[in-house]
Length: 167
Length: 167
DNA sequence: CTCCCTATGTATAACTG
DNA sequence: TCAGTTATACATAGGGA
Image 1 (cartoon, rainbow over the protein chains, first blue to last red):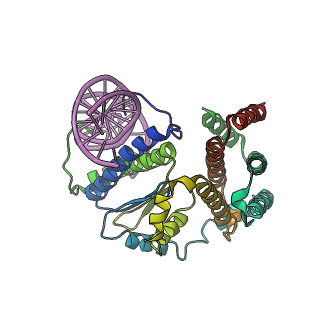
Image 2: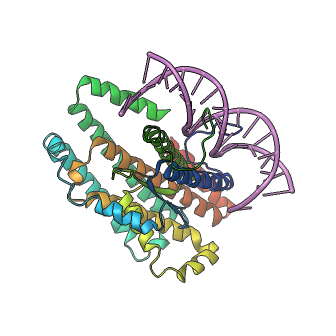
Image 3: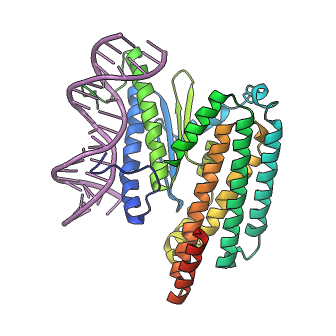
């Protein structure tokens, strides 16, 4: 939508990223407003920058009202998709959970140290590597689980999706 | 943005309004996603139709987390924020810690959910993507911090180490 | 950040099957 | 209701103030 097409990934140049953020943020809010007016719906939008600055939009008077409505939307809802997933994937999800748990512990043991801030570069790199290793493990477990529980048509779809995600 | 310009008011024809809603809703969500990816920010979006149907989008953690963050954004913050903004120099370590904190929260919120086991494949992929994004962020911040606080000899060492890690 | 400018890429209004 | 098609209106990348 500009002089050049840009690819959908984090803009690395910080200055450029910020300019784009300003432009697109206002564009997004404009569109949110248009949707709410044209189609007579309630819209709530929040944006947090990585520095903790907040931008928001809401169609009505208060975003907090929309949030309340959102939260109350989920009361008495959590039994519906139980039977579909539970039986088939129980084992692989078990393993998955263990992995996540270990990952959690690893991170916690580092982050909760009083002098986390004083971690030196080597420690950080070490931690990153651990994260990455766990992530890889989780991924491969998921892929395995997917492959085991799927028809060949689904496998084809997955393969395509995976190839897509590489591009 | 179409054959004709339409004015910014509620579309009266119900059928037309619904068609427009479907198109613009997906457009809005797409733009929200693009903003979050390109500019590396957290985005939360909720849409309630007048018939109570809910559509939502969020960039990172579950929307509930973004909402929590939104709500806590207004608690005892009106004075401390000033200091954070003015102390720009101390930010890299701060931000690094915040990132790890967020990563932790993200994982926790998923693992501790009672129905974590019911995560479907899409959710898993989503979680993985989040992990990866956070990891990338942390890495780049570390590298930035390293570069700022080092002599050129150290920078050379780091560069060598980074190249090594790619092999 | 905000505003301007222009060339382009996108979103979408109206229409059709 | 749900996909395509097409012509237009809009949004925005890049560059500058």
